[in-house]
Length: 221
Image 1 (tube, rainbow, N blue to C red):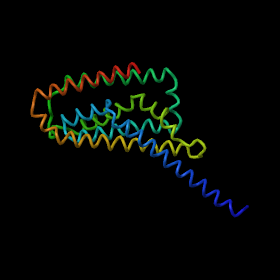
Image 2 (cartoon, rainbow, N blue to C red):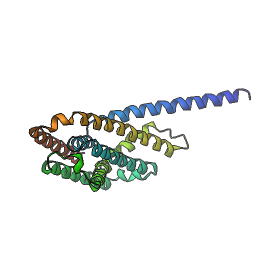
Image 3 (cartoon, rainbow, N blue to C red):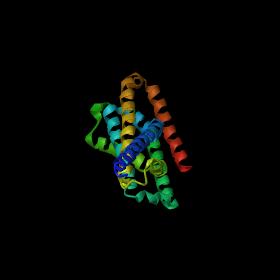
Image 4 (cartoon, helix red, strand yellow):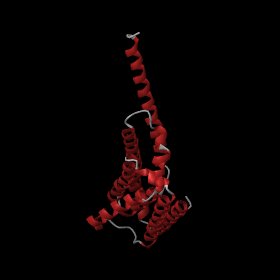
């Protein structure tokens, strides 16, 4: 009987490895579906790239990624459970709603296209912070970590926190790749559109309307 035990153990290791790979591929597919779904981050980064170029757009992508990282860290340490309380969800929801409305209003009232030479270092810091807040104040990201990510976790494994961190940072990577691709694409075609003052105004109002729409959607969430 003893000679067969190592084979049995190897079989279990193989099954666990296949299960882990399947879990990762399943989560990665879901993560990509979420990332390519237009949301507030999309609109903010697209409008920023059209108006100010790829550098501010990429800074916003980094800020956006750090906003997701915050939710991942919260989930890893088990503190995301606070979002199960109605009061916590209520507070985050309305702060996020107010912030999206603020961005929409600022988009409407903003100046027309700026050139890269007019950008200043403190402005890039502000862009980073805004990109961060767009996701940090979005309770849907936390609920994504709470409701969907656990479905891909092997609860029998001792390294549950490590699994959460790995999958969570996988989402950060996938979302950042999608948004970075958008920045480069928009930057390529931006020159065609920014020559038209009429288009700039239409795009500004369109972006503001979408942000208002997302704020209403978040308020009703």
